[in-house]
Amino acid sequence: MGTAASRFTIQTKTSSSSQWNSNIIEKLRVLIQSSTKSLDQIFAEFDEDGNGFITSNEFRNAIRKLGLGLTSRDIDQLMAKIDTNSDGRIDYSEFMSKFKENNFDQRMK
Image: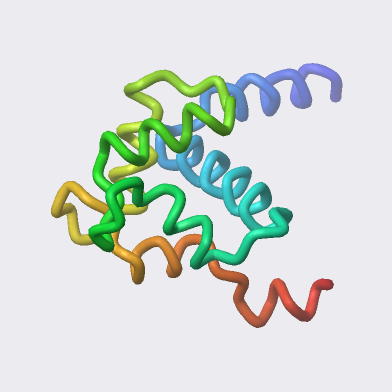
């Protein structure tokens, strides 16, 4: 029994990149939802130049300010996961679709 548990732990630690992205997105979602700021305010802070899009540079800066200890490569992978239309920037609807609370979240509270 101890051996099986050890194998499971090893498999968990070597999980796929997509699992890693989901975990980071979930951590980011928790951070954002625990903030006293609204999603609109957080989006505006990420969008440094106020053009309505979060560029990869702006996203990198914002994530670094959060101090999550992610590498540039990690941040780029995270950006790609959020940038669902792959245009190189995160628009408001992409941001909201990843970070807004859904009905399930509301019921769990």
